[in-house]
Length: 316
Image 1: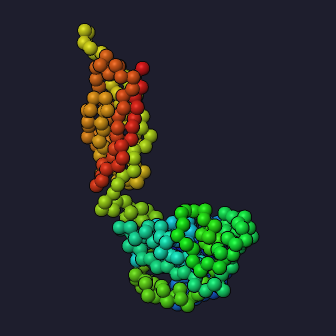
Image 2 (image 1 turned 90 degrees about the vertical axis):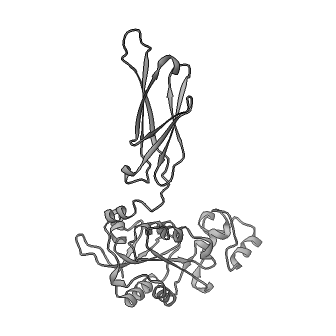
Image 3 (image 1 turned 90 degrees about the horizontal axis):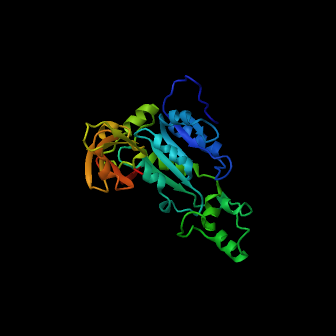
């Protein structure tokens, strides 16, 4: 039931179904595909880390009206959904959606324009657990019998710390028969737009739209470096040094023109406001060389300020 992407094929709106191939399986994926296609009259494209390259996944997600997948890291790809799309996150039996919300939080960030809804399997007979697997994949054989039985009979995962709790691993690695009727109704009740009116975005358009929310906290500057050179001086003048600092802009700031930098020299408390990721300062050689090291602290400034990063200049 998979819709294959062909190079150069016209790309209209579609439904994306994220499929895992080793665990957390959707056991009735063919039925789910048929139901989604029938209900919304859109092609269904199956995506998985093993199925397509990252550029292809970005391209497909850029035209998706709906994305559906079991809870897991592959749902981070929902960051490439266009405005008006809907993310439907599926949870196995006993895993309360309200306790696991990273992807809900992600698509609800300012500027995303993506809807979110979750479905949790409440039917214990529509699940297959794997107590004989390795403990990291939900196995229970390393536990005492009474502890194993307690986990297997539990109807919900109790609150726990991430991420090695055996009750959590046992439940999250279950395979699931999805109730397709419930899923279709959830989508119908929570969709943000009509199926054929999704905003189609290329990866570049997507990146440009995500450039700057109203409030941006830049990451720390990267690759800070320092070079020191004596400068030419007139006869009988005090020798001077030229110290040149350079760094790379924060990784999360696409529009570098909007970034400025605060620079502070710890030893003298001098400060500079810099428009570019570089700074050259000069000073008296003898005065500076009483310090073995000069510590320059640099932070990026946009609508908010990053943390300071230290650039050390060794003088001796």
